[in-house]
Length: 315
Image (spheres, rainbow, N blue to C red):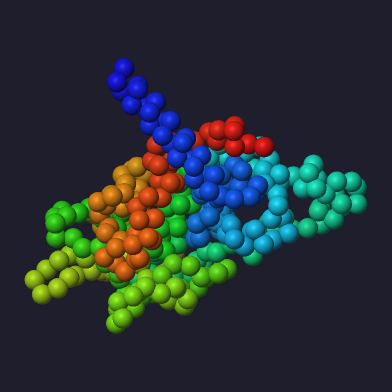
């Protein structure tokens, strides 16, 4: 009984938290809380045939667009869960573009271009890790609820932060890695850490990511797995004719001391009070550091595989 009461209290707390968060998002455009997830730049997934599907929508740019006074579900019909149970249908005719003439105009329009000016993603990152030789910039695909949010993290932290097994946590330091060249589609996002001034600047052509260091006498050593990247590159060359045993051996070699992390553990590792990453020591302002610890979305993804949007938020 106490366990059931605890779960009930947790659910009530989450609903109240989400209601409060959504109430802060003004205007009818987000009456279902869509920006709770979609507001974060860098969200994308690798869809069919390797095509990049961008899920980010900048809410400020959206509110300056032609469709600024519409709710998301005026066009994207039938969404009652996060993630959506099926591919959302786009309906331009039941609310706005009515009549044969208007329907004809919509039919000729590329609907996938409507949000293009409101989206930002990384399309190229000079990542030196051998991880990137086999795994693309948006590698997470297993869990629909979290894959886009996890992929966003690829632009802020190195793979090792989540996936490297740590033997001596007391000797581990989270700090900025060397800046990497980056190419954005849309407005730049993220930060560049100036090692001379020790300040954070807005990313433009270079971006900084948080990585793992091992603390040793006399300094720190980065724990990015750059060793023997050439072998990983050879694995991708068809002419090498690697057999299955050889391929498995190489893959296992690169995945030693690599772990898969549960979503709940991944979120709570950093986004909480007393998390592993102390954002304030990395140059973030006090306000921003607190925001990173109190992200409302973390409470949802850590507790639900599918979140049913309360009908009170629906039109």
